[in-house]
Length: 89
Image (cartoon, rainbow, N blue to C red):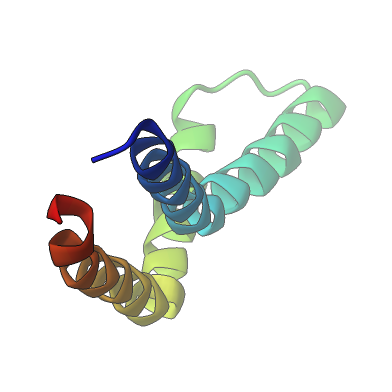
């Protein structure tokens, strides 16, 4: 196995991890920003106020994007397993 192949696999792995985590992280970021803006405008400083909307938003994001995330991960894994004979030879 060459260094180029290892770097290529590592790059693909990081890109897939980025694609899979993006919907959840972006949802949490947007909801967190909206709640923080609301808290600063109303001067309500309650810690649990930020937690519950984020939890619900991430749950909804997983319900919406979960199927796509699973298909992406399975396709990446199948491609990786299909490439094993070429990497060993």
